[in-house]
Amino acid sequence: MPAAAAARGPLLHQLRRLPAPRLAAVRRSSGMRCVSAAAGEGGRERRRSSPAYDGLLLDAGGTLLQLARPVAATYASLGRRYGLTKPEDKIMEGFKRAFSAPWPKTLRYQGDGRPFWRIVVAEATDCTNDDYFEEVYQYYAHGDAWRLPAGAHGTLRDLKDAGVKLAVVSNFDTRLQKLLMDLHVSDMFDAIVVSSEVGHEKPAPEIFKIALDQIGVEASKAVHVGDDETADKAGANAIGLECWLWGDDVKTFSDIRSRSLEARINGR
Image (cartoon, rainbow, N blue to C red; front, top):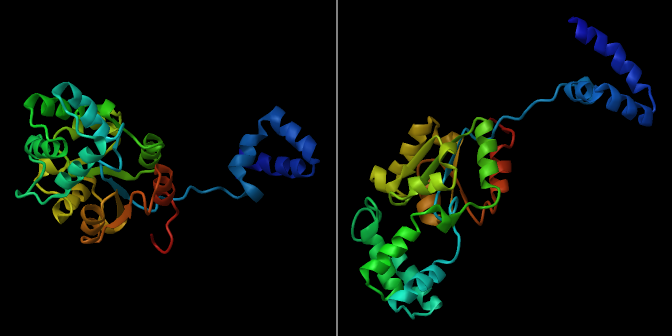
Protein backbone atom coordinates (compact mmCIF):
# COMPACT_ATOMS: atom_id res chain seq x y z
CA MET A 1 0.00 0.00 0.00
CA PRO A 2 1.42 3.46 -0.87
CA ALA A 3 2.48 5.53 2.13
CA ALA A 4 -0.07 8.27 1.39
CA ALA A 5 -2.92 5.75 1.31
CA ALA A 6 -1.72 4.07 4.52
CA ALA A 7 -1.67 7.38 6.34
CA ARG A 8 -5.09 8.39 5.03
CA GLY A 9 -6.96 5.46 6.65
CA PRO A 10 -6.34 6.31 10.35
CA LEU A 11 -6.78 10.01 9.60
CA LEU A 12 -10.22 9.51 8.06
CA HIS A 13 -11.20 7.25 10.98
CA GLN A 14 -10.33 9.97 13.48
CA LEU A 15 -12.12 12.65 11.49
CA ARG A 16 -15.36 10.64 11.32
CA ARG A 17 -15.46 10.58 15.16
CA LEU A 18 -15.41 14.40 15.40
CA PRO A 19 -18.67 16.36 15.94
CA ALA A 20 -19.98 17.86 12.69
CA PRO A 21 -19.09 21.54 13.51
CA ARG A 22 -15.54 20.54 14.53
CA LEU A 23 -15.15 18.35 11.41
CA ALA A 24 -16.19 21.22 9.15
CA ALA A 25 -13.65 23.52 10.82
CA VAL A 26 -10.86 20.96 10.39
CA ARG A 27 -11.72 20.52 6.72
CA ARG A 28 -11.64 24.27 6.10
CA SER A 29 -8.28 24.72 7.83
CA SER A 30 -6.50 21.59 6.59
CA GLY A 31 -7.74 21.20 3.02
CA MET A 32 -9.38 17.85 3.81
CA ARG A 33 -12.16 18.67 1.34
CA CYS A 34 -9.86 17.27 -1.32
CA VAL A 35 -9.38 14.03 0.64
CA SER A 36 -13.14 13.62 1.12
CA ALA A 37 -13.92 14.34 -2.54
CA ALA A 38 -11.30 11.87 -3.72
CA ALA A 39 -12.50 9.18 -1.33
CA GLY A 40 -16.21 9.80 -1.95
CA GLU A 41 -19.01 8.69 0.34
CA GLY A 42 -17.82 5.81 2.47
CA GLY A 43 -14.39 5.92 0.84
CA ARG A 44 -15.72 4.79 -2.55
CA GLU A 45 -14.21 6.33 -5.66
CA ARG A 46 -16.61 8.32 -7.83
CA ARG A 47 -16.90 7.45 -11.51
CA ARG A 48 -17.73 9.65 -14.46
CA SER A 49 -20.58 8.38 -16.60
CA SER A 50 -19.77 7.73 -20.21
CA PRO A 51 -21.84 9.62 -22.81
CA ALA A 52 -25.07 8.00 -23.95
CA TYR A 53 -24.07 8.70 -27.59
CA ASP A 54 -20.77 8.79 -29.45
CA GLY A 55 -21.99 11.37 -31.95
CA LEU A 56 -24.41 14.30 -32.12
CA LEU A 57 -25.66 15.70 -35.44
CA LEU A 58 -27.33 19.12 -35.45
CA ASP A 59 -29.55 20.86 -37.98
CA ALA A 60 -28.58 24.52 -38.52
CA GLY A 61 -31.45 26.86 -39.48
CA GLY A 62 -34.28 26.67 -36.93
CA THR A 63 -32.27 24.55 -34.48
CA LEU A 64 -28.68 25.68 -33.90
CA LEU A 65 -29.24 28.98 -35.69
CA GLN A 66 -32.22 31.14 -34.72
CA LEU A 67 -33.20 34.40 -36.39
CA ALA A 68 -32.29 37.51 -34.39
CA ARG A 69 -35.66 39.03 -35.38
CA PRO A 70 -38.70 37.81 -37.35
CA VAL A 71 -38.14 37.42 -41.08
CA ALA A 72 -41.21 39.51 -42.01
CA ALA A 73 -39.98 42.41 -39.88
CA THR A 74 -36.59 42.28 -41.59
CA TYR A 75 -38.06 42.10 -45.09
CA ALA A 76 -40.39 45.02 -44.31
CA SER A 77 -37.77 47.29 -42.73
CA LEU A 78 -35.20 46.72 -45.47
CA GLY A 79 -37.85 47.24 -48.13
CA ARG A 80 -39.10 50.64 -47.04
CA ARG A 81 -36.58 52.60 -49.09
CA TYR A 82 -37.58 50.49 -52.10
CA GLY A 83 -41.23 51.40 -51.70
CA LEU A 84 -42.33 48.18 -49.99
CA THR A 85 -45.64 48.69 -48.16
CA LYS A 86 -46.91 45.11 -47.83
CA PRO A 87 -48.01 44.32 -44.23
CA GLU A 88 -45.79 41.99 -42.24
CA ASP A 89 -48.49 39.35 -41.81
CA LYS A 90 -48.94 39.16 -45.58
CA ILE A 91 -45.16 39.03 -46.08
CA MET A 92 -45.02 36.06 -43.73
CA GLU A 93 -47.84 34.29 -45.56
CA GLY A 94 -46.01 34.72 -48.84
CA PHE A 95 -42.72 33.59 -47.32
CA LYS A 96 -44.21 30.36 -45.96
CA ARG A 97 -45.99 29.68 -49.24
CA ALA A 98 -42.83 30.13 -51.32
CA PHE A 99 -40.51 28.34 -48.91
CA SER A 100 -42.69 25.21 -48.74
CA ALA A 101 -43.53 25.04 -52.46
CA PRO A 102 -42.07 22.14 -54.47
CA TRP A 103 -38.75 23.05 -56.04
CA PRO A 104 -38.39 21.82 -59.64
CA LYS A 105 -34.66 21.15 -59.32
CA THR A 106 -32.90 18.47 -57.30
CA LEU A 107 -31.48 20.96 -54.79
CA ARG A 108 -33.10 24.12 -53.49
CA TYR A 109 -29.74 25.43 -52.38
CA GLN A 110 -27.24 25.22 -55.20
CA GLY A 111 -24.04 27.12 -54.56
CA ASP A 112 -24.91 30.42 -52.93
CA GLY A 113 -28.65 29.69 -53.14
CA ARG A 114 -29.51 32.96 -54.87
CA PRO A 115 -31.96 31.49 -57.46
CA PHE A 116 -34.07 29.93 -54.70
CA TRP A 117 -33.96 32.92 -52.35
CA ARG A 118 -34.77 35.36 -55.15
CA ILE A 119 -38.07 33.55 -55.71
CA VAL A 120 -38.82 33.43 -51.96
CA VAL A 121 -38.17 37.16 -51.43
CA ALA A 122 -40.21 38.16 -54.48
CA GLU A 123 -43.15 35.93 -53.50
CA ALA A 124 -43.08 37.18 -49.91
CA THR A 125 -42.83 40.89 -50.68
CA ASP A 126 -44.09 41.35 -54.27
CA CYS A 127 -40.86 43.29 -54.82
CA THR A 128 -38.55 42.21 -57.64
CA ASN A 129 -36.01 44.99 -57.31
CA ASP A 130 -32.53 43.44 -57.68
CA ASP A 131 -30.91 45.85 -55.25
CA TYR A 132 -33.52 45.06 -52.61
CA PHE A 133 -33.01 41.33 -53.02
CA GLU A 134 -29.23 41.71 -52.73
CA GLU A 135 -29.58 43.75 -49.54
CA VAL A 136 -31.80 41.07 -48.00
CA TYR A 137 -29.45 38.31 -49.13
CA GLN A 138 -26.37 40.02 -47.71
CA TYR A 139 -28.14 40.81 -44.44
CA TYR A 140 -28.55 37.09 -43.75
CA ALA A 141 -24.93 36.40 -44.70
CA HIS A 142 -23.71 37.96 -41.43
CA GLY A 143 -23.81 36.53 -37.94
CA ASP A 144 -25.64 39.58 -36.56
CA ALA A 145 -28.80 38.36 -38.30
CA TRP A 146 -28.73 35.14 -36.27
CA ARG A 147 -28.33 33.99 -32.69
CA LEU A 148 -27.57 30.77 -30.87
CA PRO A 149 -30.18 29.36 -28.48
CA ALA A 150 -29.44 29.86 -24.77
CA GLY A 151 -26.84 27.41 -23.52
CA ALA A 152 -25.79 26.22 -26.97
CA HIS A 153 -22.12 27.14 -26.71
CA GLY A 154 -21.73 25.63 -23.25
CA THR A 155 -23.51 22.44 -24.27
CA LEU A 156 -21.32 21.97 -27.33
CA ARG A 157 -18.20 22.52 -25.22
CA ASP A 158 -19.33 20.02 -22.57
CA LEU A 159 -20.19 17.37 -25.15
CA LYS A 160 -16.90 17.86 -26.93
CA ASP A 161 -15.02 17.60 -23.62
CA ALA A 162 -16.88 14.35 -22.92
CA GLY A 163 -15.64 12.89 -26.19
CA VAL A 164 -18.85 13.20 -28.22
CA LYS A 165 -18.21 13.85 -31.92
CA LEU A 166 -20.20 16.82 -33.23
CA ALA A 167 -21.46 17.57 -36.73
CA VAL A 168 -23.74 20.08 -38.43
CA VAL A 169 -26.03 18.55 -41.07
CA SER A 170 -27.95 21.26 -42.86
CA ASN A 171 -29.98 22.10 -45.94
CA PHE A 172 -28.31 25.46 -46.49
CA ASP A 173 -26.34 27.47 -49.03
CA THR A 174 -22.66 28.41 -48.95
CA ARG A 175 -23.21 31.21 -46.42
CA LEU A 176 -23.45 28.71 -43.56
CA GLN A 177 -19.73 28.16 -43.01
CA LYS A 178 -19.16 31.89 -42.45
CA LEU A 179 -22.20 32.20 -40.19
CA LEU A 180 -20.88 29.48 -37.89
CA MET A 181 -17.54 31.29 -37.72
CA ASP A 182 -19.28 34.62 -37.00
CA LEU A 183 -21.11 32.97 -34.10
CA HIS A 184 -17.90 31.39 -32.77
CA VAL A 185 -19.00 27.76 -32.96
CA SER A 186 -17.36 26.58 -36.19
CA ASP A 187 -14.35 25.10 -34.40
CA MET A 188 -16.62 23.13 -32.07
CA PHE A 189 -17.61 20.75 -34.86
CA ASP A 190 -15.74 17.74 -36.20
CA ALA A 191 -17.74 17.99 -39.45
CA ILE A 192 -19.92 20.60 -41.15
CA VAL A 193 -22.01 19.02 -43.90
CA VAL A 194 -23.94 21.49 -46.05
CA SER A 195 -26.38 20.35 -48.75
CA SER A 196 -25.18 22.88 -51.32
CA GLU A 197 -21.62 21.57 -50.92
CA VAL A 198 -22.24 17.81 -50.90
CA GLY A 199 -25.07 17.68 -53.46
CA HIS A 200 -27.67 16.02 -51.21
CA GLU A 201 -30.49 17.51 -49.13
CA LYS A 202 -32.26 16.06 -46.13
CA PRO A 203 -34.19 13.77 -45.96
CA ALA A 204 -31.86 12.00 -48.43
CA PRO A 205 -29.90 9.32 -46.54
CA GLU A 206 -26.65 10.32 -48.25
CA ILE A 207 -26.24 13.59 -46.34
CA PHE A 208 -26.58 11.85 -42.96
CA LYS A 209 -24.19 9.08 -44.03
CA ILE A 210 -21.60 11.64 -45.14
CA ALA A 211 -21.75 13.29 -41.71
CA LEU A 212 -21.45 9.98 -39.86
CA ASP A 213 -18.52 8.92 -42.04
CA GLN A 214 -16.73 12.20 -41.39
CA ILE A 215 -17.01 11.88 -37.61
CA GLY A 216 -16.39 8.12 -37.64
CA VAL A 217 -19.55 7.13 -35.74
CA GLU A 218 -22.13 4.48 -36.59
CA ALA A 219 -25.79 5.50 -36.95
CA SER A 220 -26.79 3.30 -34.01
CA LYS A 221 -24.41 5.22 -31.73
CA ALA A 222 -25.45 8.74 -32.73
CA VAL A 223 -28.45 11.05 -32.50
CA HIS A 224 -29.63 13.85 -34.76
CA VAL A 225 -31.46 17.00 -33.58
CA GLY A 226 -33.56 19.02 -36.02
CA ASP A 227 -36.84 20.89 -36.32
CA ASP A 228 -38.45 19.27 -39.37
CA GLU A 229 -40.56 16.13 -39.13
CA THR A 230 -39.75 15.03 -42.67
CA ALA A 231 -36.28 16.37 -43.46
CA ASP A 232 -34.82 15.63 -40.04
CA LYS A 233 -36.79 12.91 -38.27
CA ALA A 234 -37.90 10.77 -41.21
CA GLY A 235 -34.57 11.19 -42.96
CA ALA A 236 -32.53 10.22 -39.92
CA ASN A 237 -34.77 7.32 -38.91
CA ALA A 238 -34.55 5.87 -42.43
CA ILE A 239 -30.89 4.98 -41.83
CA GLY A 240 -31.35 3.84 -38.24
CA LEU A 241 -30.34 7.17 -36.74
CA GLU A 242 -32.31 8.37 -33.72
CA CYS A 243 -33.73 11.89 -34.00
CA TRP A 244 -34.98 14.37 -31.41
CA LEU A 245 -37.27 17.06 -32.77
CA TRP A 246 -36.31 20.53 -31.61
CA GLY A 247 -39.25 22.13 -29.78
CA ASP A 248 -40.86 18.75 -29.14
CA ASP A 249 -38.46 16.06 -27.91
CA VAL A 250 -35.95 18.64 -26.73
CA LYS A 251 -36.73 22.30 -26.08
CA THR A 252 -33.38 23.64 -24.88
CA PHE A 253 -29.71 22.87 -25.30
CA SER A 254 -29.71 21.90 -21.64
CA ASP A 255 -32.13 19.12 -22.63
CA ILE A 256 -29.73 18.02 -25.37
CA ARG A 257 -26.83 18.03 -22.94
CA SER A 258 -28.56 15.99 -20.25
CA ARG A 259 -29.95 13.41 -22.67
CA SER A 260 -26.66 13.08 -24.55
CA LEU A 261 -24.59 12.59 -21.39
CA GLU A 262 -26.85 10.11 -19.58
CA ALA A 263 -25.01 6.95 -18.51
CA ARG A 264 -25.41 4.05 -20.93
CA ILE A 265 -28.18 1.66 -19.93
CA ASN A 266 -28.45 -1.83 -21.42
CA GLY A 267 -25.49 -1.15 -23.65
CA ARG A 268 -26.72 2.32 -24.75
